[in-house]
Length: 262
Image 1 (cartoon, one colour):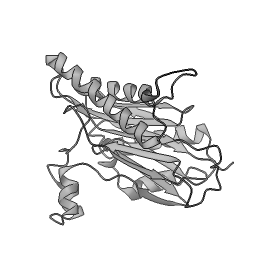
Image 2: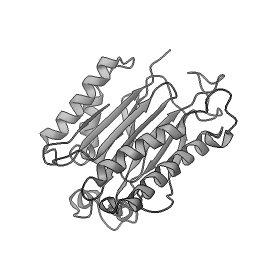
Image 3: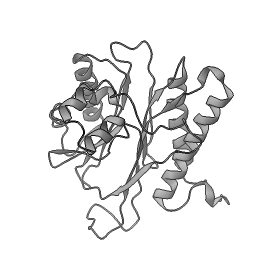
Image 4: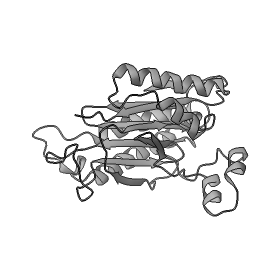
């Protein structure tokens, strides 16, 4: 994973974090005056990871990490939302801060390995709030797995504007959901069936505002089906460099997860 402030912004309000041991990965894009955006994104990412972690051995508090992945994810998002919301209420200079959040939880069961069937329960869970995105590259095809919670996306779905108009809209920055802006937040949660060779990309909109899906796909094409840490690091740098080359008008954060064949 890699986060860069871009070529225009003076600070970086994005945050990314991961705990590969429990299969949890998260990207946040903060917003707010003063240092609000930076505080919101880091607080949300850290709280999400802490909440999603399974209870310690011998723990008697099952409510902290419920068994169902979608319940765990929602609880983690609500905990992050409360942390940001309460911090904003307690600190006047942080009033109005919030953040997007997109995260993956890879939670394979003991009897659900790489040869999964459609009837098997999902083992990869995706949650998001706002316009940070998740993409999946499978067998050379790039697919966006999230739908932006934004005014422009709602206009697109309603057929009020074209994709070309959406790309140039002055309202592209207006999101309709954010972590921390209200006492509670609705998160979209979906289960997926991963396959060996899948490559997942979590990213803030600093990447997707500068690069088309075709641009992203071309860069991800260089990642082999059995990726190494070096491959992923180099590809993160290539994505950030490409976004900066196109203007770098916002902070850019990318996180790659490769599911290598066993």
